[in-house]
Structures are given as structure tokens and as C-alpha cells.
Image 1: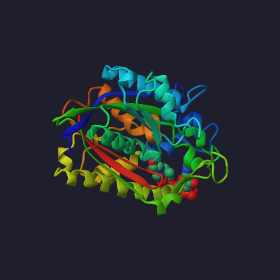
Image 2: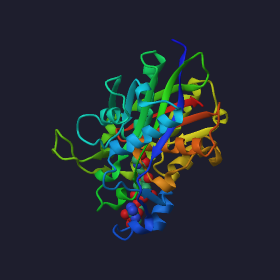
Image 3: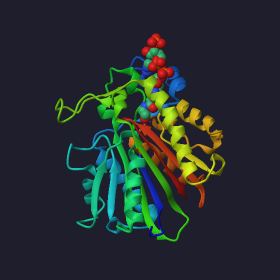
Length: 322
Ligand code: UT7
């Protein structure tokens, strides 16, 4: 142990200009505002337009996070970008962001892929670089252009997702209480057919579309998200009462509410953004985090619990002393 903690010193976000309500969606998809609202809590989602690629959204979010941290792109040593919808199969979207923010040939940049758990995975990877002293500052981004892999004929999935990006800057501080306290990651490949894309370079040669067994994913999500929270608390000798803010992956309001209920955590302590964003996959947790930081809800020394579950199945948590 080096005694270094990775502190989040800046956050940023980007949402596409176009926001589409349930009613607007119902003009082209066989659904209704009532159904989507009741079953998911989603009211509207942002849908990327011309030029709003994954790297564009990630770059905008990154620039804002750098600005809020008071540093330049050249101060960043590594970019870890979580996405399921890269600009291209390769190179990694992270290297485009590296170029865009002016890192030059300094440091390194790569993508991680854990679908909706992507941000927690990326944060965990970056935290390891920082706490081992390999890097001083890391840029962690969650960015997804999920609407490009939706089957707009499949109402059971297409109403659930939206596009967006958000970023955080990590900086190593020795002997600090503030920063990432712990991370826990899990995956269970035998359930990969519950939520997947029916295409890819080595199989169909196409990008494919999202397929999901919604009810099964829902069941696993409630169980795994609660387990992830409990694991993080137990590992640190804490209880749910010690947590100031639960910042969960935003897939479905009902999943979030059941997780909070299981933990006996009042909804006032939960950051909820699913209503306006839908499920933005890897961007969902940092978007929620950014919003609650910007509006002043999250304050210095607050204890935050971030948790996610997604395709793979993958799940995990991060406990953060702000
Ligand atoms: O990040 C992790 C990724 N995903 C998730 O966490 C999602 C997990 N799953 C869910 O959130 C929920 O399972 C859904 C929101 C996807 C579905 O909710 P549900 O309460 O499990 O609904 P259901 O699948 O049991 O469908 C109920 C009914 C069906 O009609 P019948 O068979 O009862 O007549 C569906 O055909 O609702 C129908 N339905 C719809 N109706 C209007 C399904 N999608 C729609 C729709 N609009 N968009």
C-alpha cells in the first residue's frame, strides 16, 4: 500500500441536444407514456443527432470535467473510457479523446467494455493506476450512443435507452481520507444471453441490436445491486445509515426503489436521473453524479455508494468519500 487515495477533483457531462418524450416516441413505437412511466419511471431520453458521436460526447464531458478540476488535458496521464458503442470497432474511442483534449503523446488511453457496469469497471481500473502510484491523474469517462444499437421495432427495449456521456478526473493524494475507498467488481458469463447484442465482428460482421430478457434482467438486477451494496459496506465496516448518497445505475426506477427499500435507505438519499435520461448505459452513473455535484446535493466528506449491473452479466460498486 502506498497510502494514496484517488480523489475525484472534477466532473463533467454532455447530453445530446435532442430530448424525446414518451409521447413523441409513441408516435412511431407501439407504446404509451403511461406504460413507460409506470414500468420504468422514464419520461424522456436524449437521442444523439448528426455529429454527436460517442467520442464527441465523451470529449465534451471530458473538457467540462477538466475545467471543473482546474487542469488541462496535458495534465492527464491515462484515460479509461467505458463504452459499448465505440465510434469504430478500433481504435479505442479513448485515443480520439486523448487527441481531442490535447494530451499529445503523453500517457495512454484505452476503452473498457462492461456495458451498464462500464463506469464502475473503468473507475476501478483507473483507481488502481492512481493508488499504485503509476499515474498521478486519470480521466474516467462513461459514454454511450446506445440508441444506435437499438431495434426500433422492439418496444420492449427501444423505449428504455438514451445517449450521453459524463466524466470524472481522479487525482492521487497521499494520506487522504477523501477519494475512492473501495471498489468491487463481478461478472457471471453464464447469464450473457439475458442481455446482449445479436451481432459483432467475429460472428455476423455487423454491429447487431440489443436483445433482452427484461424480467430476468430485472430479477438479477435487484438481487445483484443489493448484494453489491452490502459487500461494499461490509468490506469497510459500515452500514447503509453511514451512506449519504446512493448513486445507482439508472435503468429503471423500480429497480432503484427496490434496492433502496432492501437497504432501508430513504429515497431522499438516492440520486435519480432515469426520468430525464433513460438508461444511458456506461454514462448513467457519472451523469447522475455530475448532476448531484452541480446542484450542491453532494458535499465535501459525504460518503457515496455507486453501484451498477449490466450485460455480461456484470455488476459492481464503488464507495467514495467525497
Ligand atoms: O442496465 C440493465 C439493463 N436493463 C434493465 O435493467 C432492465 C430490466 N428490466 C426491466 O426494466 C423491465 O423488465 C422492463 C421495463 C423491460 C419490462 O417491464 P415488465 O414489468 O417486466 O414488463 P413485461 O416484460 O412483463 O411486459 C408486460 C406487458 C407485456 O404485454 P402482455 O404480454 O402482458 O400483454 C408486454 O408486451 O407489457 C408489454 N410491453 C409494452 N407495452 C407498451 C412491453 N414493452 C412495452 C412498451 N409499451 N414499450
